[in-house]
Length: 244
Image (cartoon, rainbow, N blue to C red; front, side):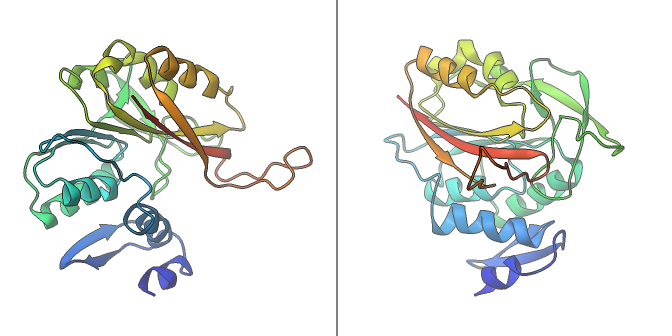
């Protein structure tokens, strides 16, 4: 019932949500409610591992819902969370601190193909911040970058990548390290103004021995030949679940 009320509210309302005695702070009540439902009720990223101390990397961690889910299931997991948006990163810090998790490293940078460069980041106040220009007069902020491959020096039980259009750049950057990764989730975004590259991501996964499953997320277009529906210039979000 609490989630249903939040879904019906206005966008970009900050607040907090009591979950098992701890407060989860959010910047947008609507996106929080839908994401919480997917992660904790539908458990769309649930996974099994025989490793009692799994190594998990959450790229595009946002306010930390996936990270909280993983640490709740695997309390001894070593977790690295990467988030570029300064506003959202503060909430991520607050949420991880609220749960008093140990063995969690938080990094305020954008995963990219270079270390210590700066890129313009366009935040949306919720879960849709991107390194891609939104095609408007909106002014970006400068964020520091990092190579994700630098973190992948041992087996990674689960890697999550949700970085609003930079998926292929990062996947190409870590290609030589994919042998370390057991399970990976990538949220692929198809933009109106950007060439589609889903095939290149899938080819990378196939070349490195992954099986994959694709799941269509919103927005939904009932008659794609007649009309594509868009959400923030995106006409398709696809969850890529891959494993060996």
